[in-house]
Length: 210
Image (cartoon, rainbow, N blue to C red; front, side, top):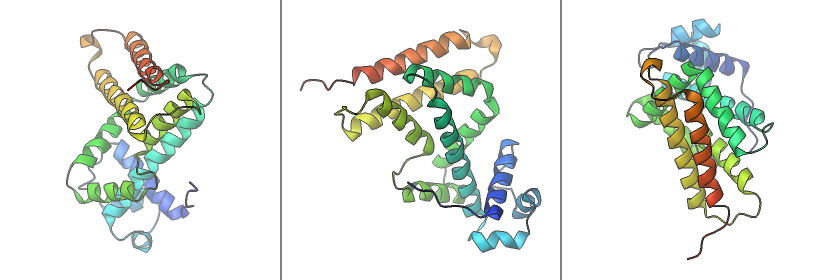
């Protein structure tokens, strides 16, 4: 799907929101003035593009997720198989723990009842494939691994994606633990996770008998 080109001022606002969010800003108390000051644009400019602050915040979070996942997908195309791709995702998680923490905040945000959350969920509903960017990325990786001759239902593929997402979330939680209390080193956990994800996908390569 072709993406709409965004105005430089919108991109500047999105970048400012993403930076402030990464720095730990509370979205509920973040002001338009703080965002526009970081973006280097006039406060009134925001309302030329957005109905309100919440719409801008939601758009910025969605855009950041979309850009990060699109760039990650390009990098993963250099890998030979699903195991190597998943391993790279896990390594990236280890090397960018701040981003992982922000991803948790976004997931939590999607589940609350704030105005930003409502705007963000509306963005996902309007998306053609109705998926969070991370889900869309994993769906592509799984379909590529299974090949063109797969005969799985949409429900089966969605289950595999959800199963993979749940493992990534668990790994992120594991990484957030203090190193002193981790039961195993990250390399060991990474290998086991990649193996299990690939096993689950491989088991669905051939449709089972009724």
